[in-house]
Length: 79
Image 1: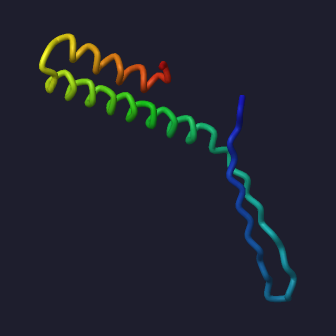
Image 2: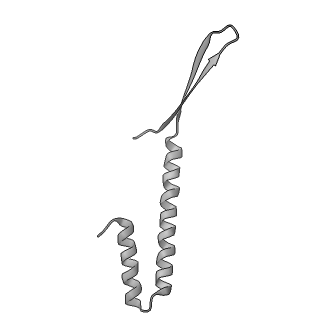
Image 3: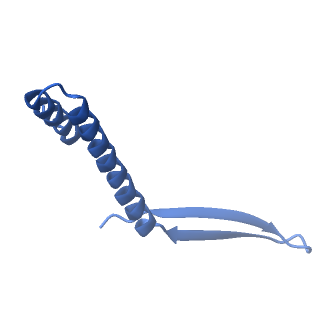
């Protein structure tokens, strides 16, 4: 599985002039997965809204079906 990480580093200077570096590596894979899920859900909701609007605005059943098919094909990458 692909892992996503965030890396942050901070330099520290002590009172006796010594220096140190603190490096933190954080696994953010689950957060990225949730962000992707939310994004897909938003895209799906947008498609539903567009399908609903197109269906309501169509002047015939055939026109509505054609528009919905075009929207779904565009969303799924079918040509």
